[in-house]
Image 1 (cartoon, rainbow, N blue to C red):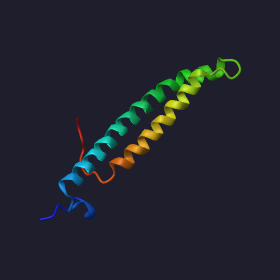
Image 2: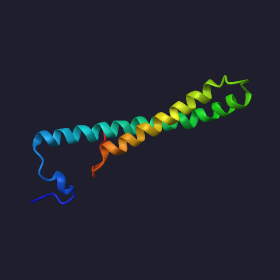
Image 3: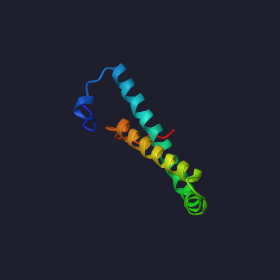
Image 4: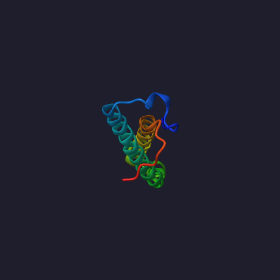
Length: 94
């Protein structure tokens, strides 16, 4: 009997295809974890970036640049993780 929780295209996969699918979903889970960690750092660094943006002269705002980079990385990793993790109906805990 077919597992009705699985999408139709995943019901008749070979073992090698299942292994590739699991590997893709685990990589997606890894990207989600990295993305959420970057999001936490981005949120914490925002305090220093605001102070740096207000008090530093000219274009010398290293914390602002680091904050923008961390926010961009969080967005990239979260979107990639969601895309790679698609179709998963289970919670993966390591």
